[in-house]
Structures are given as structure tokens and as C-alpha cells.
Image (tube, rainbow, N blue to C red; front, side, top):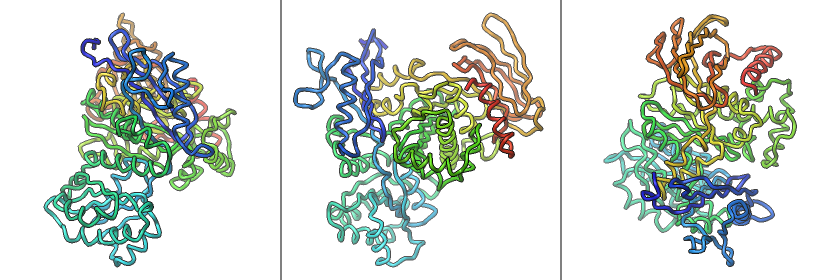
Amino acid sequence: MTTSLVDAESLLALEIGSVTTRAVLFDVVEGRYRYLGAGSAPTTAGAPFHNIIDGVRNALNQLQEVSGRTFIGADGQLMIPARPDGTGVDACVASLSVGPPLKVLAVGLLEDVSTESAQNLATTTYAHVIETMSLNDRRKTTARLDNILRLRPDLIIVAGGIEKGASQSVLSILESVGLACGVLPKEQRPEVLFAGNSALVKDVQQTLGTLASLQIAPNVRPTLDIEQLTPAQPALAQVFRHVRARQIRGVQEVDLWTGRKLMPSAMAFGRTIRYVSMEFPKKGVLGVDVGASATTIASAFAGDLILSVQSRLGLGENLPGILSLCSPDDILRWLPIELSADKLRDYIYNKSLYPASIPITEEELLIEQALATQAMYLAVRQARKSYPSSVHAPLPGLLPSFEPIIATGSVLTQAPKRGQALLTLLNALQPTGVTTIALDRNNLAAMLGAASGKNQYLVVQSLDATNFYNLATVISPVGQANPGTPVLHVRMTLPGGHETSREVKFGALEVLELPMGQTATLRLQPLHRFDVGMGGPGVGGNAVVTGGECGVIIDARGRPIRLNQEPPMRMEQIKKWRAVLRA
């Protein structure tokens, strides 16, 4: 895309995380948008600043030093648009993940229909459902009122009533919401998001419009068998901005810089994955963001996005939440060293108190990567429950075949060795079939998603190998066999005609050496009715692959991966895998 086809505007992207605030500059160089530089600084939402603007300005100061440009004027404000002398920037976008999970009350008619959809909508942002309310619970209005006043939710999501369906029942359950909002002081009232029967919008506005900050969204459950969350997400993003502006100083100022388009980082990340999926319509695209505030799984199938944000699986302040979802042994199983459950708990709680701390010993690094493995393992299995029935996996409980898988998060991008990041992803996600695993090396995915609403060209031209780094092509045959049984025959043909062949045994993790960026044709022939994603059990075929930094990986460890039950043998097993991937 040449500059003649591009509205050549410079763009500043901000990402305000719970630990780090980043500022990135994009501009046109030689006819293409380029990532020109970045600045970062600790986020200042907490003590002693209690204002995110300080961290934003510190990140911008660093970016100014790197780029040689000036962005902040004498009045301390961002200069938009750019000035003739080259100072300032033409546009600004921002995403935000800092702050505690929103406390959400999910309201619906039926617990396993509309109430469930309200809960599912909440999981598309940084939120925690603290209570549900439906006709099924049979509580009286006074009991519901007391519950709302006791819990003090930040947000009440109201679903219910399919299109042309129930109306009076929805209004009666809203009575408790209205009473609670009327009793609470104005500054303590929850936000209300109505995503139910569109025929009730006027009635809902009359009931709640003067009592709460009310947002209206398209019905998340228009029929009994159809759930549509994506159309409601812009309204949810607006609610998110309102709540964060009340909780954290500086949010409103950044929102103004963006033209009131500040986005939750998870939603921005999902936008990027959705965009990539439209370029790869034959398979789905999987995005994984392991952050300090949450682990986000974005799955997109030909443009249809399924977003799952697991706030209890963040690696920062929320880290103790992982222990509510699994046992210490579930985390310890990924370690190649012996560690007690008590020592693991100590690390988890210390990390939650000092989320900006980084591992300084080999043991701490291994613990951090084991926690990331388990967080992704749990998050992707939760996300998988929302996949449509049209998406097929080779066996129940496994992921479908994705192309590509895109991963981001400092625990992966800043791993001392690329093999460590790759093994963490393979153990956690356990992909199937043939897939490329790409690493968002500059952590740009959320920024590009935020930018997509302002500049599509920038997004298209930034989704390249310089920013999204090819870790490896991975072939994962799926089936059951005894360890040591041959399950896959592989023949690799290089462009010059040179061929190598290999027989892969069940339980093995092997590397085919293929230099970074070089292509080769693989002839895959599964044995014993193993499935490599080419049409079913026992069906083989050709795949053109590109070498990543870790080459081409054959992961024949089985799905799910079989870990030895004896700790000493399991640790040796993991050490061997690390050696294979040079981790």
C-alpha cells in the first residue's frame, strides 16, 4: 500500500496495563506504516500517584527520547493534531486493563438461558460475576433489594426476554434494581446495561433512566437457541469507561485524547484476532494474552469472535485467584524441579503484592512459567465451552485446529529463550493438527485493535513478521497408542529437492531443523489412525510450512499430554522436553 493510497497520519497508541504503561508511535515510512518506537513506564494508578496520567506522561517522555519527536505541549497536554513543525501526533488511541475486575450482577429470566447470556457477556471484559438474579431463584423483592445493597455491584447486566417474547416478567424483576438504585447515593449507584428484549427499551428507560446510568445494547439472547454477544460489546465498553473514570483519576483525560474511544485492552485484542481470522477463513484463529490483570482468550472463526477474559487468572494482583480454580499440584506438575506447595503459595501471594517484580533466579523463572502454563490451560478450556457446535475438534475436550495461534504477554515475549515461550504454549494450549505459533514480540495486538477503528491501513501493514514473530510450525498428531509406537511418518522436501524422512513415535517431542523463513513441503502420513487435521483419522497429505525460530516441531506427546504420575520421573520428562526445544 503506497502513501498515495494511505491517509498518512501519524498515530500514537497507549496501553495502560495494571503494571506497565506503554506508548507506541506508528507513522508512514517509505510508503508503509511502521512501528517506529515505544516508551514504557510503571503504571501510576496506585499509591502514591493515584492518577494514570503520570505514568502515561513518563512513557511519552521515553518515547520522545527514542523518536526525537515532542508529543506533550507546554500545558502538559497531548498535542493533537500534529503541528507543521513536526511536533504532536495526528491521532491517538488507547486501551486499558488496569483496575479491579468489575463486580457484576447478572440478571435474567431463566437461569440457564438469559441469565447465562448476561454472565457470558460479563466475561468479555475485566469483570467478576458476584451474583445472579432470575425468576428461578424465587426470592421476594425485599430479599433481592437487600442483596443488591449488600453486594454493591459496579454493573448490573440485564438480559431476558427473547425478541417478541416475555415482557412483564422482565419488568417485575427490574423492580428490585430500580429500588436499589433509588436507595443508594447517586455516586454509589451501579451502572445498568440492558441487553434484553428490544420491545422493552422504552419501559426500561422509564423505569431506570432517572435512577441509574443506563446503557442499551442489542439483545444478547434474541432467540432461545441463539446467543449474540458481539453486538453488545460496544455498550459494555462504554460502561467499562464510565466505571473506570469513577475509580481511577486520569482515565477521563486519556479518553478525551482518543475522542472518547478508550477501549478495554481485552476487547481491543479480540478485534485484532477477529481481523486476522478474516484472512484465514478455512481455520479459526486463536489469540492468547497472558497479562497481569487477566488471561484473555480470543477465538475467531471467519470473522466471528468469541472473547473470554479470565480475571482470576492474571499474573499480577489477581494471581491468588488461580488457587480458587485449581490445586497447587496442578501448577507444580509443570515444573522440572522439586518445590513444595507452601513455597508455591508464598510466591503467589508475594507476586500479588508486588506485581511489577520480575524473576531473578532460575527457580522463580520456572515458577512464573508454570503459573502461566496453568493459567492458559484453564483459560482456554473455559473459552472452549463457548465454541459453536459447527467447530469440530479431533476428540472431545480438545481444541480444534487453529491457524495461526498468536500469543502475547511479557511472560512469553520476555522469556530468556524462545524455546521456553514455545514449551509454555505447547503445554498449556496443546494444539492439534498443523498450526503456526506466532509471538507478538512487541505486544502490539491490543494497540492495533484499538487503532482499527481509526486506521485500517495501519493494522494491515503492521500485521507482519517483524512484529508477529514465527516461533514454530507445530504438527500435533492426535490419537491413542502405547509409548514408543510409531504414529507418524514425515518426509520433508526443501525447495532444492533435498529430502529427509523421519518416523515419529508416540510420546516424542521432536524438532525438524528448518531455518527461519525457509519454506518446505511436508508429506505427513499418520499411522494407527492418528489424526493430523487433514480429513480425519489415518488421512495424510502435504503441508507447505515455514521455519520459525524453533524450526518445525512434531509434538506426538498425545492429547491431552500424558504426564508421569511419579514426581521424579515427571520432572525428568519435562527436562527432556526443555532440552529438545533448547529451553
